[in-house]
Image (cartoon, rainbow, N blue to C red; front, side, top):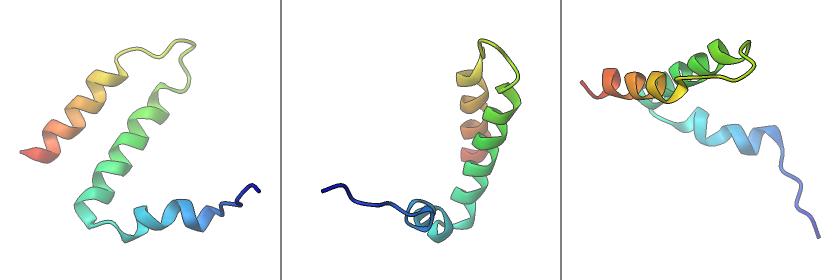
Amino acid sequence: MTQEISKDDVQKPIHDAPSDIKQIIAKVLQAEKDKLYMKTPRYINDDLLKVFEEEIK
């Protein structure tokens, strides 16, 4: 009864997104990657807010 989800199914909305949305996704992923080394990541919300503010302006 479980449905198999392929990698392509998950990434399809990202690939179909407009270029400005792809740019936001890329910046968010980079901000998260920058915090991976930390045992307890801090201020990720501030980093994400900065990304959104930059893209809205």
